[in-house]
Image (cartoon, rainbow, N blue to C red; front, side, top):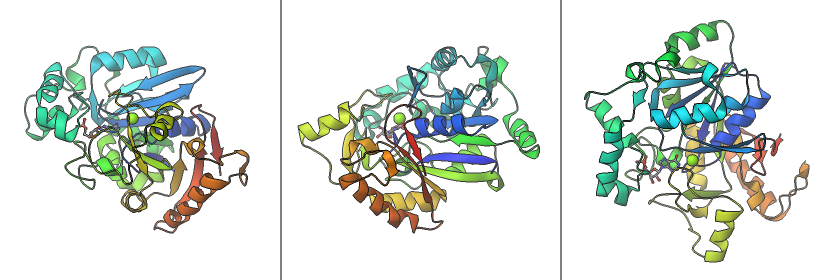
Length: 338
Ligand code: IMP
Ligand code: MG
């Protein structure tokens, strides 16, 4: 199907970047599209290197895939330039003219806002302040106004729709996750945008007709970098340390140690419904006991087996997604495909 979508089923940091990169390396997508702001970070382990990215789609790993930033993208040009350089993607990046530039004044305003930084736990990149200016119809700079980005600017809706008409396939990588959606999440402990599949399509300039598979990404536990609800939060220092070291559960943008709690089935079911997820992608299974991957899921025992069983409840939630991918390590190819 034309546009596969990757969404977060929890509180962000489920491993969407890795899943996006894996899918792009396997499926020859013509375009990898990303929307959202620089508050989000994703990490891709590829070719012996670790790429910590904020704006570049994980799909950069496929050299023939063109990379697109939609109108719902918020860009810090200095950061994007660096990402273009380290990923070597100068010749295949396309930016919508209406992508918003997050200016230093936005970042400064957010960081000076004690409520945002304290109670809400904002990452402090300025996305919220830029979104607010856009909602208020204040003067903004767009990608089309930024001399450094001009060469990448193209009419994205026209480009993508023409490509769809010719039978192109695409992957659309969203940001954050269910609990952080401004629309459906745990308000006020949410980000400044909706973070579900339909919104990502709209932010890219794509209508709903072209949605293909929707991959909802989950970890067997929930992490959260900011305040807000976490079910059965792990408080034991030694237990937490395992997540922070072996699980690398440290904010890739914020640098904060992530809070950890149990898998929340009610949130997961909501994520399946609201995103109309057709595929489940599980990451970090290696953090559970019994995750021996040598004979596929057949060799899973103990905690890992028990967790995979609980996923059956999710698979019985309409539209009845299937467990499609199980990631058992940070590397791009550390994935079981079912
Ligand atoms: P803001 O979007 O920076 O205002 O942050 C609002 C809340 O969402 C805070 O709890 C942040 O830690 C959280 N948040 C924002 N972006 C991400 C993300 O990409 N991953 C995980 N949490 C995020
Ligand atoms: Mg992240």
